[in-house]
Length: 132
Image (cartoon, rainbow, N blue to C red; front, side):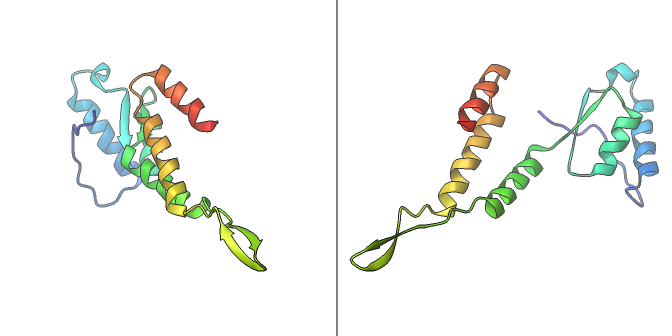
């Protein structure tokens, strides 16, 4: 479960501004041990680098939505199937054509099943099954 603990309004999302915001957040907490061990971010590599510097014991991970968007984009651009063409009655016909949407749906459902696994064991099982 993700939730917001603070908001900061900055003139620019530069490394020094982000570091300052995280340092102020640490000051607001009773102790550094109150800081959660995971921070969920969008694809902002600058923020992820600052988290690694200011909070070295904390992991910065990508928000599920952004990862899903990347999976969708890669599926759309990389999952193409060449139609099988056969000769029937002296004419070429396309047979067993797999629609790109079917490939996309299959891959995306497999990804969702894997990342939504409730346990590490089911995650590993889903990951292995999906790769076969």
